[in-house]
Image 1: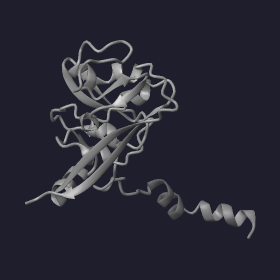
Image 2: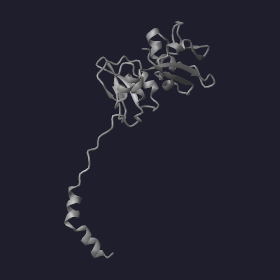
Image 3: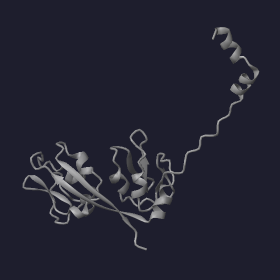
Image 4: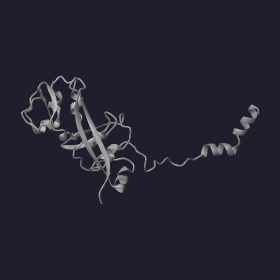
Length: 198
C-alpha cells in the first residue's frame, strides 16, 4: 500500500467524523474500589486501632485538633488496603463499600498487643518508659530515667533494664518503639476478625 493510499484512507469524511466525535462512557469507580480513606464525621475515641492495624509505616496518624481526635491519612504512604476502615469500631473512616460490607458480614475485630524487649540491646535509658502515654496517664510523676514507684504502669526501668509489667495495658501506639534509640523494643500485634453474635 502506497503513502497515497494511507492518506486517502485517513481523509475519508466518515473516518474524520468518527475520529473527532468518538465518545467513551464516563469513568465510574466500582463500589468495591478502595480509594484513600476519608472521614465519615463520626466521633473518634482515640483507640488507635486504625494506626495499629495499618501495614504501611507512616500512613496514618491520630491527631487532636481543637480538642477533637481524628485520624489523618498520609497519602504518600497509604496503600489503600482499607484495614483501618475495617478495624475502626466507631466507623470514623470509610472507603468504597467497605463499611457497608463490614456491617452486612457482621465482622468485629479483636486485637492483642504485646511489647517485646531485646535485653541485649536495651541500655535502660528510660526513653520508652517516659514517652509511653499509658505510663504518663497512670503515673504523671514518672522519673526522667524511666523509674516509677507504681506497680500499675505498663513498663518501667528495673535493675538497669526496661521491664514490661502489664502487657494488657498496651494500646499499640508504638511510641516506645519510635523513641528507643537502639531498636530494642518491638510491639507485636495480633488482630482477629470474628463474626458478631446475633
